[in-house]
Amino acid sequence: MHRSSILTIGFTLLVAAALLGLAVGASALTPVQLWQVTTGTLTRSDDWMHAVVLDVRLPRVLLALAIGASLSQSGVVLQALFRNPLAEQSLLGISGGAAFAAAAWLVVVPLLSLQTGWLDLIALPLSALLGALLAAWVVIRIARTGSATDVSTLLLAGISINALAGAGIALLQTLASDAALRDLTLWFYGSLGRAGWSELAVGLPLLLGISLWLPREAQALDALLLGEAEAAHLGVRIESLKRRLLLLVSLAAATSVALAGIIGFIGLIVPHLLRRLLGPGHRLLLPAAGLFGAALLIVADTAARTVFAPLEVPVGVLTALLGVPLFLGLLRSRHTA
View 1 (cartoon, helix red, strand yellow):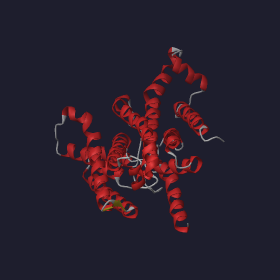
View 2: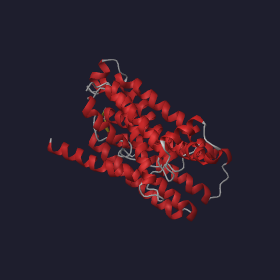
View 3: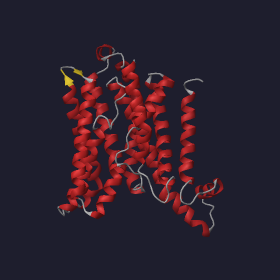
View 4: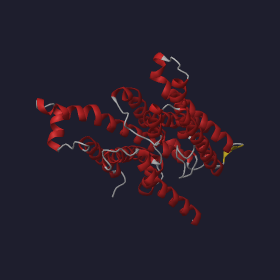
């Protein structure tokens, strides 16, 4: 199979996953009914289908697409930056930092009865971004020795930041009101249940913009795989590249956390499997990761809201069930290599 055909397969799977997400639910739709919804040929008695698909399922599918693509591509970028297949937002503390900062805004503002007005529109994603950037800065500073970054220290620092963020969120949960506690718990484990058109208006352009920009860095990332000194000889401005990519990855993680909570391991599962098929070259790896990551999260979200219906399982739980065994397998293979 030619490597470029992976993109065709990924696009086909993404379309199939999106159609599945639109059709499957508490009220399943046939392909004919779904076609009638999209073409506007429903009868008056079937208007409920229009509301279910366009107001409930379509925003979830689009948000899952944007988050899955950006998180998967961010995983590829982090693994190239640190030349380690275990690097991923949730493992490096970026998602934990974003989650704690966003949770602090959600709990502290109502607790203090602060009047924020129009700030509510941007405060949650902005606080998540600041938390993600602060976590990334702390982790990198701890792992930095001279001009080199120790990967083992980086991962250990990330795990420590995640533990600290988890403890902070647990403390915030004890302070939260009963009304906010359940939503905060679901949000901490990842859920697309809050997806709506207003959330998409803020998050979709940003996440898709990051997903479209990252493949432009493929050549520089390929050079970085040779080593920082070699990449510098090839004309890559290493520090500028790192700052730019870490900012984009942190922005993607912060936006994802603000809109859907922590959804881990997407940036670990997809890049690892695709790298086995495509090799390390980023020209194909980054767009393929976007397609497959989007398809995986759409399928996971569809399963999360249908398998145990009427209960909804946090989608982050399902991605963790897939990702943790793979992570342990990676650790085992590195130990026995």
